[in-house]
Image (tube, rainbow, N blue to C red; front, side):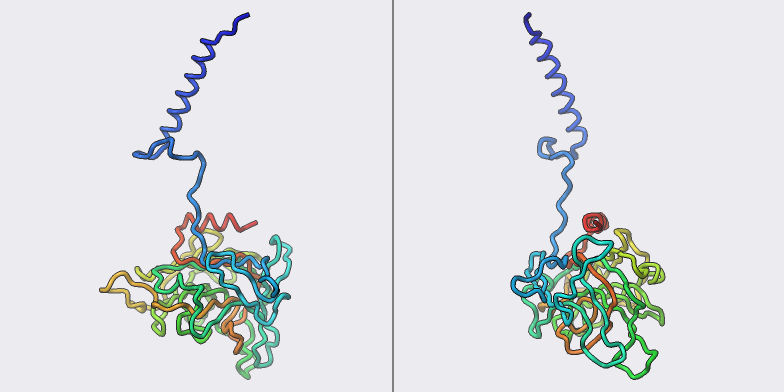
Length: 318
């Protein structure tokens, strides 16, 4: 029996035509359909520095290797390798930060970071940067804020809870260029983005409206992100991929972005480091310790869009 080759050819031609029309219909105007790959999303921005706390530095488990582009190795201050712990709600290992001796003035709190008194060259992407984003996963594990071990008053507590930030180029381990933290604003603790465009200059704070205990309830992992645009003088906060309503704390133009020259950028200095879970990563004193667990911390030299924030949240929530 002879095969009906003409019928098969007609069917193949019909299917090919239908496929071409379908692909063309979903291609943007002016872009050839054959130049696109169906279902391929735009690549996410790459972080300058990123830490998942599952990559001890070769030969030194008290340090953590950078999974970003900069190669900035973190010190696991005071806790060392013991700072990496398993968690019942996150895969793999996470970072544990904590206050150790709340009733004694000391500098033994567990935190992480890097500090260079002349600046950290691997963080050069933030030298003169126009933008930045700080984001990660956080879980409160105790009754924060911690008791203030730098004062004699037994009921005194720190006025901030350290999360993660990039130091300025002149920082003594506390002042920051871009910071995600909890700070007392008008007598009330708030989740904030705090930025400083010019080394030694004024900072601006964007504070979330919601009660911080609702944003970061004890025992629950939460994704937080803060964005900083030094050119436009704007900041934003996100929780679990969604924007957090908030307000600017300092009136006027604390970043001095109005008027020429343009564009406005951060100071042309390498940051002196990164601080995580408290201040002073060089371990000279305790400051704003966080009894927390942290994971998938990332630092970008650009403002991530809301869609990119959501994509990073979904990518890292496992």
